[in-house]
Structures are given as C-alpha cells and as structure tokens.
Amino acid sequence: MSAARAPPAPSSVADKVETRVRARLEPDPAMFARLAATRADLVRAVGQAARQQNLPLVRALVAGSASRGTFLQDRLDIDLFLLFPPDLKKEDLAKAGLALAETVLANPQRKYADHPYLRGEFHGFAVDAVPGYAIADPSHPLSPVDRTPFHDEYLRAHETPAQVADVRLAKQFLRSLGVYGSEARTQGFSGYLVELLVLATGSFRALVTAARTWRIPVRLRPPAEDPPRLPEEVALILADPVDPNRNVASALSRRNLATFVLAADAYMAHPDESWFRPFPALRIGRAEGLERVRARGSEVVVIELPRPELVDDTLYPQLRKAQRTIEEEVRRAGYSVLGSASAPGAKGLLVAVEVETARLPAVRRQDGPPVGLDRVGHFLEKWTQASAPRLQGPYVDEEGRLAIEVRRPERDLVPTLREMLPRLSLGRNLAVGPRSYPPVRPLAEQPESPELEELLRDLLGKRLPWLPAERP
Image 1 (cartoon, one colour):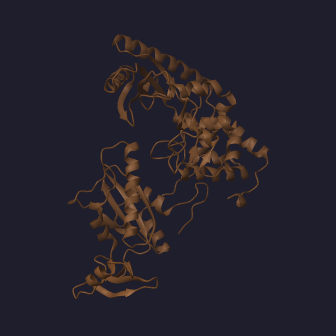
Image 2 (tube, helix red, strand yellow; image 1 turned 180 degrees about the vertical axis):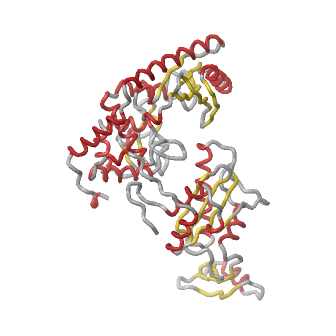
Image 3 (cartoon, one colour; image 1 turned 90 degrees about the vertical axis):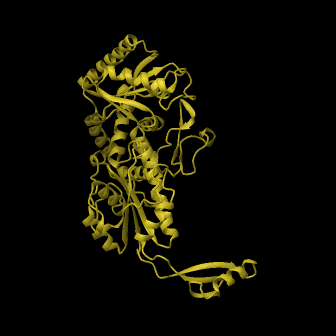
C-alpha cells in the first residue's frame, strides 16, 4: 500500500477544510447551556426519586459524549448512569434501576443489549438510563457498564478543548465511511476509542497522518503493555487506561480498520469537505442484482432463516457464524464459492452464497489411501464389487494414491442446501430442525425486501465508500 500512496496535499488545504467542518459540527452556546441545565436537573430528579422510593442509589451521573461535549448534534443521547452498592444482587440492580428511571423519564421503553437499560425523554432530550455498580476499581467491574464513569473522569482530565473539537471531526469522518459505532452490527470504532486515539496522537490531523502508515494488527503501545488473551484476528490493540486488562478496540473489525487506513491516506492526498458527509449507499434490488450476476457469469442462491427474538448484539454474531458455516459447507460440497453475505429482516434472516455455477458435473472424484497401506485392501474390496456406484476406477493417480470416480447423489446447489441445512451448526439460536426446511431459492425467485437490498449491496456492490459506483 505504501508504494501507491499519493503525496499529501499542502497542509493549508486541509487546514481550511477542517476549520470549516469544525465550525459546522460545533454546537452553539445555547445548546451547551440547555444541555448543562438538563444534566443537572436530571441528576437532581433521579436523586429525589431514589430517596422517595427508599432505593439504595449511591450516585447518579451523566457520562459519555453528552458529558464531555464530544457529541455529534444529530446523534445526541444523554447517558445516565444509576450506580448502586456492589453487594446488590444483579436481578435487584436491574429492577431498582429501571423502576427508578421509569419514574423520571417520559415515554420509557425497556431495552437490553448486553445489559438492561431504559430509553426515555427528559426536557426534550433522548436519555438512556443504565443501572450499574459504584465500584472502586475499574479493573474489576461487576457489570459491563461499571468502567464508564472512570472513562469519563479520565477523558475529562486529559482532553483539551481543541481535542474535544477534533474528536467530533474524527467521529464525523468515521461516520461518513460507515465505520463509526462499536455495536455488533457495525463492528466499528466506539466513541471512547475515537477519543483515546485523538488523545494519543494529539489531533485529528495527527491521527489520519499516523493511520496512513498503519499495518494490521495495529499496536499503539509496546507489546509488553498488551492486554492478555487477545484474539488471533485482533485489528487494533490499545489497552484501556483505566483497565489495562481490556482492549478498547476489541469490537473493531479488520475490514473497518483497513477502510479507515485507506481513507486516511486518500483524505490526506485530497482533503475536501465531502469526506465529512455520509457517502451515498448503493441500492441494489433484485433486478439490478440479477443484471450484475449475469455480467459476472455467476449464480446466487438465497437462504431464508427464521428470525429469533434476540437483540442485535446477540443476533449479528450468530448470523455471521451461520453465513461462514454455510459458505464452508457449500465449498466442501464441491462448489466454487465467490462470496457470501447476510442481512437480518423484520421476520427473517437472509444468507446468500455466490458460486461460479450452481450445477456440478455428475462425476465426483474420491481419493483413497496411498499404495502400500493396509487400508488399500479394504478400499479395493469395497469399490470393485459389482454393486459399487463407480463411474471409473479404482485406479492409481500420479502421486501413487488409489482413487475412484463416483456419481454425485445431488448436482444442484438449491436441493443440496435444503438437505444440508438441518445438520449444520448455524448458531445457538438459529438451528434448523430436522423436519424444518427454510426457503432456499435462486436469486430470481427471492421476493423483494429491504434486507435483500442490504444483502445484495454487501455481496455484489463491494467498493470503497468514497469511490463512485460502477454499473455492471
């Protein structure tokens, strides 16, 4: 990648672009004042409600981007943390925290990711009220959210006003690329990770300049400071400053990090305000998908699985596992796989596999043992019987192994998939029963739907976000 790297544009060009975008992203003083007053009123209202209900609330605080001013105005949610004593049982924590929030927030809705929380409104702002524990040591959290108040304190103590403005710049840049957000659906950069990266490099410009030379996996500290138990496919390694045993970038995928690295290089070569506006997403319906498939000379088969009642952070990892499993099994069955994709819908989950051809030859070669092994006799005995379903052989191949060529029991991908799905381990909640046959269709027969558009974009519309779309 370094050989193709374009020289950066004059810094004055990037200065002008970033100055204009910073000004556009800067909330006006009235917004800051209204937000500050709302935060104070919210914490006060929660404290009063806790006393009235005789709940053991240790403290309530607003943390996150609404606390530090690093929010993007059209994505502003107030994160309210309700911290209870560490000896409170988890079921009592959720019950007390959610009940408390319901008395303060308007239009409350109970939600659940990897931890229960309540979404509602207060003074016109969207609020996520999250129960947690008031712990003393962030390296020993009792719930997934217990470190967040320590993150808030750390960033407040270290960020300068200029870096706060540059965090907004970095978030908008990543958002335009579609790689901002650490939820399982996106697998991108969390807000906390963005702030730490700006803090570590000093500014947005320094971050994109450094990123141009990154090689995956990216290590921003000496190896001796790595958190333990890093997965093999880790993309970026950055120990949490409040808990050195945790990698802040654990949710970030290699694909999204690589997209940012390439975008940083392209931006520095051609800085422009368009980098800070979302790039238009391709829309590929069934008709255009079929046109692209014809141009590619391939075939696409779509599997529709029932959708279980799961939150996104649980659903997406299982759906990706199902996609990988199906692709591997199709390849093992002898088909030449070009790619696969998956997408969830309101009622069903779609998985697509693109193959060079969906119909295989009638003949399939089956290798036997090398000549000289004891198993040779058994192989010959089995395949020289008159009833053996052989088309050719047994014979010795060029490497001295016995081989046989047999007739395939099934040559077409659609019935092959229908037969294999019930025996595959697709995911904890995505299992297909032995008498259940989910729809398996060629693309031409798959009904139109928003999830089909998403599926086809990921399968047949792959491109760097800033590049113009190509017609087939």
